Image 1: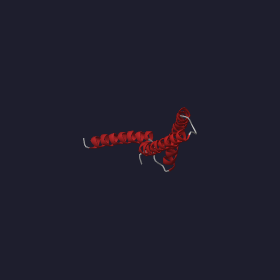
Image 2 (image 1 turned 180 degrees about the vertical axis):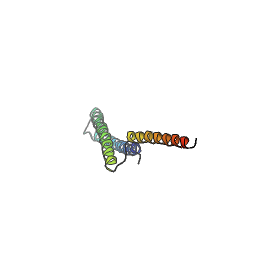
Image 3 (image 1 turned 90 degrees about the vertical axis):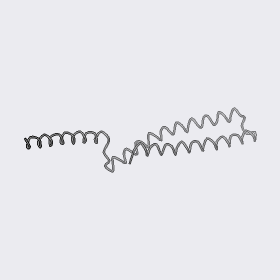
Image 4 (image 1 turned 180 degrees about the horizontal axis):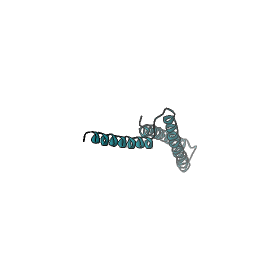
Length: 107
């Protein structure tokens, strides 16, 4: 499972949802303006404030998702990239040592 790909997919879902919320919010505030419940400046201010809050919460959600995905991956035993890099280095060193030993035996 690609950690970054999963997070990107979840974020795209969040962005799509935010876009739908923004569109619906615009429709509702436009209707409120037509009905005389809000003036245009109040509607714009209301939408702007609510969208700022949603975007702020999305940032918190992204951080929370990243932590949760890392925790789940750790719980199921998926190694971190640094651990994989260390193992690759160790494997390279062992392969070199085996080649050196084989070369010594065949001389």
